[in-house]
Length: 633
Image (cartoon, rainbow, N blue to C red; front, side):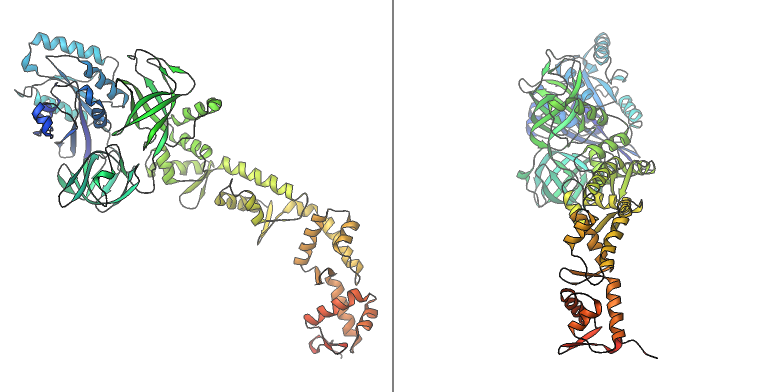
């Protein structure tokens, strides 16, 4: 049986018993800092292992409740699967009770239990009143139907029932994918004597083994994992859903900080622009204006940013819209990640939402409608539709499976399955083992290449493949270029010989012209024309004549015996036969008379025959080589 790992977070107002409840459940006091123990108040995140069953292991992330430490709270609950939402029976609903619930809702937490703590301090009537307050607060929220269980960390009343409720809900939590991209947002950094730098965090996706190479973003630092621990126990492998500590080699504590991400090398990059769907809380007192400076929280990071509203100049409370968030420092987020935003000062949570694109192009107001249409597709739950959009609209039209995994935020196996379906539907073309391009892009570029070839062939017979490639160097990837040429060749539209491309139909159309030019040489026999004369007599453009001439030379129909002197091959055959019939040595003058031509043509032709071994020169005469003499009976 496969063990499932989940992360449970606490939430609630300061001094509402989150840490005491965690200790009652796990036996671990998560307040580790001296200041926390002295003041009996959580300041930073605390962690405790919580084994629910043999195949169900949990980690509890205990968060601070004070309003000054909301950023620590947000960092703690960003990767949780369920929440233990604490409301003290003596205080009831308080400001951070409300804000924590809003943050959990915005971060997409979908399940949890409500702990009515400190029931030993109040009467039953008070408990009933606070329960009604809680029901009013959670009406319409994700905790609306969550069980409300009274507990006391002092008397231990309700603790066993609370554990049973946790197990019941935890068993229904979907397991995290171990096949996704390895991502571990850093929430703690410290050094250990003899070991060096240690970082901790919640492993939100993928898995990691000891000895692996990792990259820390945004500082872009490469490191090797020396050791892995899960709740102080050494392990060889950590998987999604576990609280994980990594002992990193070649990393200094001062080089990294909370909010950085440990991930797989060569796959993710940091960004300063994010496209998202933002919801403004209904409790906010005034609209959010375009370009407002805010605090952006995602994972364990907090970064100053500005919000560019798309399609409106201000966002009303309780409403949603597409936005581009422009960060003042880089971070790493992926599609489907959740975030919250808080005001710059005073620091109040005002909204949040879902990342739609972690690697977007710059938003331009003049292209607003196109931008909105693209974001609507990126928001779709249909991953194949999202992949098609990325293949058609992203700057680089060829994508690897790894790139699609990154841009869509799905597992490699899911990406491969979608690509296979699209390939079967003839919507994508595979380039090699792991590269794909959309057929719409292929057709677009194919049309461009066809038009360019047609334009070329209005003035010439063929085009250099190298020259054609140069024309599209910046626009068309070499793999797409080669694929298109192969498709055109397989379809019988073009022929390719070495570096030469011809349009088959064009050459067929020119057959009469080619034959006409060939005949000009053939009929001229031993007094052939030059190119200028051929152009004049044929009435064809010079470029086309030059191409046809080159083609006839390449086919050995014409033979250039000297610069500017070219004979039809039949004229050369005829000259050789005449020499064989002559049966004796011959002078240039006699050869000229024999052929009925001028010295201009006779001399270069004789020199050519010398070069190919038909004749050889002896003084002022040419003698037929023995191997070239006609045998006589």
